[in-house]
Amino acid sequence: MSNNYDIKDIRLAEKGRFRMQWAAREMPVLDQLEQRFAKERPLNGIRISACLHVTSETGNLMRVLQAGGADVVLTASNPLSTQDDVAATLVAHYEMPVYAIKGEDNATYYQHIKAALDFKPHITMDDGADLVGTLHKERRELLDGIVGGTEETTTGVIRLRAMAHDNELMFPVIAVNDAMTKHLFDNRYGTGQSTMDGVIRATNVLVAGKRVVVAGYGWCSRGIAMRAKGLGADVIVTEIDPMKALEAVMDGFRVMPMSEAAAIGDLFITATGDINVLDGAHFAAMKNGAIMANSGHFNVEINIPALEGMSGEVRRVREFLDEYILNDGRRLYLAGEGRLVNLAAAEGHPSAVMDMSFANQALAAEYMVKNHASLKKTVYSVPEEIDHEIARLKLAAMGVHIDVLTPEQEAYLNEWRMGT
Image 1 (cartoon, rainbow, N blue to C red):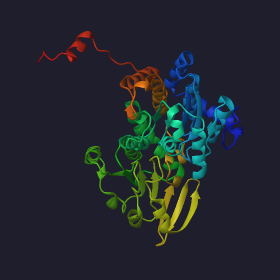
Image 2 (tube, helix red, strand yellow):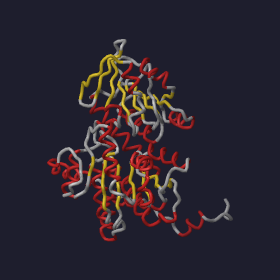
Image 3 (spheres, helix red, strand yellow):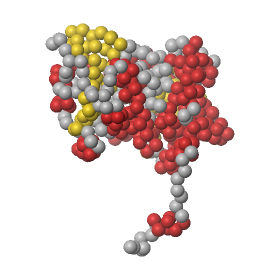
Image 4 (spheres, helix red, strand yellow):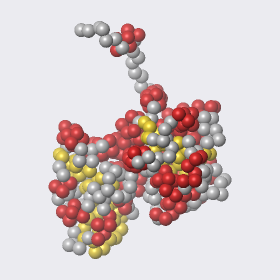
């Protein structure tokens, strides 16, 4: 067992092992990749520093990377997203250095990221770009040894593209988040289900009959709005993009500015990737008893300092629910400290969708090892052939068969002379 780790309690390892095994039942694509990786060892000798949510699904990805020959260190990508029993399992049963404790403070969080960078990685595997950001700001002496990286989430891709635009990104990164097999399924179905799961666990409120305000209508917010509607909510969407707002209207949702929605909403869920989506003016307009939750990566979408400044008292009324008693007597509620509610108050995405997302991570790492010499210092999409292979493997595992073009059909699709 590695001596280099910082976790809550190594005695939780057996519980975490069962949790990982349960998740693996619905991760057949990763299982197939593990078998191939164990034979081919495409990551042999590669050091990977991974900054991801430390969940049972992530644990299974780590197992696959190890099977492929990689030396891996894992740190949390959010202070509240760690499953402590999984962290213990990876240390005890896989001899993996892990730096992650659920509820760790901000200082510890960044100490853990720096410990992962001390590993001197060849590849970074990030979820939110905190690892890459810290590397570029504080550990630039390590940049020469890095061949590339991968990024899991929307917020991280936004940050990395900003770095690339400013010529500050010093190695190629594959935007795993932008793979079709990631954002069409993980973001929509995974975030939709797990966000509502987190809200319900944190509050135990009945969603049916509530006015649920969903901030944004990207892939994650689409899933949240869809699942809230399915639970019987009256869903309102707020947006800044006219195309997405139009799509929300066509999907049957009311669309209005947050300044209007603030006064009538019962439950507010943000998932935009931007800052202060819910701000002081919105808190001032909210009904007594309104509940707020965030499903974006960072705890900046709800302006917590402004909320605290308007409150005379804050108290924890449930395990993952804080009550803010405003100076005017109204009470507003914040779930999961404004962090990703699906991981802070629940267990994150179901393993069936993370199967595809993490297959993208594993194959993107393999691709980076093979092709880094020809890649520029910018953000790349997942190659289409990887996306299609993951979809093919997932369908096969589900027992779903699809048609194949006949030679005549294929020729027709490549023929411009044939008309009506």
